[in-house]
Image 1 (cartoon, rainbow, N blue to C red):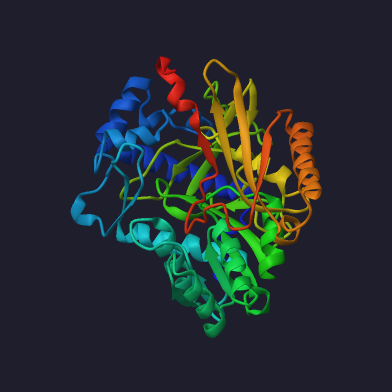
Image 2 (image 1 turned 90 degrees about the vertical axis):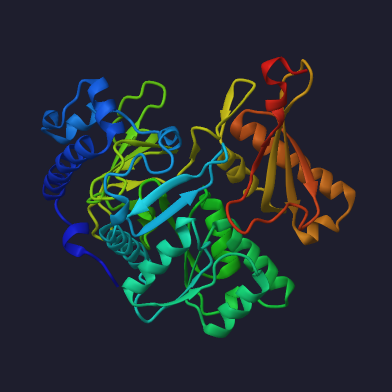
Length: 439
């Protein structure tokens, strides 16, 4: 394993001293080398020498995803392009991707934190890691790959898609660890069963799942279907990629590698930091990134932090599993609802599968409505219509009682919901067509 025990288990006072030194150095660096930060700091009336303590972080301006678009492609670089050895990019909503860059030093840090991530699941050089995250501009595939090589494990660079071949290679190569999105892991299990096989009979023992929010209920489903320990990992391209935080085998929150990534939770309404244990928007400052460091980057992800000790001995701050995003929260008839909350309710209803899509609509002049299409287990769908009606009623009542909203549940046959090789699309919001006076 690659466990930086000296850093990951350091006393809080020692860790905070390291953070302050790195924060002050990074703030001075971006002010000198990145015009965007110099202008935003000046506008806020802040100079690098004003940072005397970690509490002074709250006075620094935020960085937002739109800032990447406004400075596209390389306006946030703090090094010459000659010093950049890698560029990655994520999809953008306006046709232009969010571009991030890495120096040789950054690649080394990325490999280190991803090696720590895999070590949280006790992966060693004796393991065979089946990597089904996408390779290419997406950071997932290469991030996991470099981390697994740093650990010394054998890496199967499968990437996404070609599901039947994935299953064959998992079995034939004897993979012991798998890395992919949680929704794709269930698709793999489902496809294996259709092939007359079972991933429970493979050598897989642990999986690292990220890139989309997923619930504890889905974790239970994955562990049952694949016969593995399912761990949550977290990262985002703007910070470094995967490797920002990871669950250990105790599954009690994700350890943030905060010697490199300094977290905050802020109230998205007031933009002010909130105490440990309070839900809000997760924000990161990259303390050691060279090519494209970000200060107080607003992720849009909803979580909360704790510094309570973990059984594993790591002392770094832990974040709770992401419960949703500030930009995918649904407001339906005045009630705030996250797709993950609906997933949690559905997976408590016996007879339905973790494949669903939420359709939000607003007919002409009418109130908002929610319709949830959810797949039914094979046995239930072949039962009498009365049983299906009872199942539909139970699901609708669970949603009403738990979330306080009324929703129509539409039961569909197995395999009706489109499967995704990457991030699953869970919400279709049709209300956009009624905005700006459209009727």
